[in-house]
Image (spheres, rainbow, N blue to C red):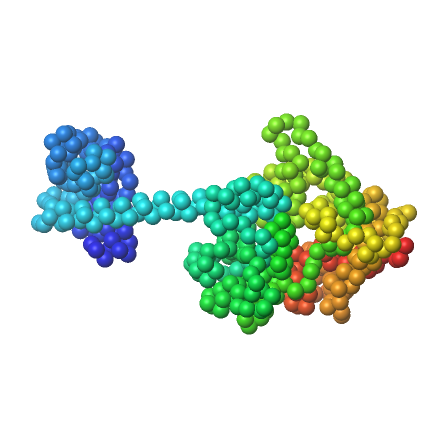
Length: 499
């Protein structure tokens, strides 16, 4: 009994009792509801539990009996309260064929104590899991607020939890077996003394997200939390961002995710992001104006009905979808039909076709520019003297066609900025001889099957080429968040003629 209590709990003890009694065993509430049950065979007699409890109620409660035995003619029912002093305590009910086996009554009296302790332990464990789930959902909510730029609300919600949100931060993504996430989270908390925010990723079941404070040792190359975790947990892979302001947590997450793609190919299973991927920092005031003009219909949208999504809901949906694709339903906790309806509305408000990679890249850039504090954007004078002229007509290019929308002309003007062109050259410098593969994949809207057909390769062959590009670029391409928007913008900037 003690061994079963330690290894299998209530269910195993009842299964063992049903076998010893050659019948049925269960825990029953005072209202006659079966809480747990087990039988020796599938055809074992299932008793009228409610009738047994009604008949035994007087003896077990009013007279304070320690046990009750009821002979039904063919079977005998034995009832033992788990706690004689508690009227709400469950009752152990065992139904066995006549005659009752010798010593069965003594056996049931002996099993009451370990069974009662097992039930108490399981009740406490369920409560602990509910508390853990509530805390996990709270941390997930704070992370969602940070990712959507709602810093003030994130601080308010985080005030009820620990630790306080650090600023600046490094974002770390730890990839491990899904069943090991709780243990790896405990190791992470132990390594850094509980100073990091640790969140179980709501999108990828194998990921933990750490929002870590930037320490003085970062600049000195000392062993940090992420390095120690990668060394201590043999089956995990770790990617880490550059130091970023807390308000730029979304940028830090993208950097960490790209670093994770690189870390998978390294013996140390650990990588830090080293090349800034964010064009929002070099678009200048003209880029901010273009982003404001593009997003204005969305920012000023007023829902017709109270239950319809407002501008903030639509912004959060667009941001999540661009980052996580169809996994945005897990991130936002909404149905896929709701996601599709919101994206359709976003496209209609902005005049974009969100099935096209070009439109997706433009919206992604506009949202990132809007999320970047204005002083962080490079001033116009740092890149080009005077205003940037707008192209009189949309410029055709090999990635997506000319397009006639006004946002194309504005985007092309932004992409002609010297600072953006320099950024584009840095992004594309490692590609070298694989540019045709990259262009074909982007021209096929980032879809692997059509790109493989156009390149004359099998789908696994095309996937291998893109996986090699991931290593060269040190960016994630095949799994969202993907660098395809940045690469589309970089190639577009390179292809545009000078104004």
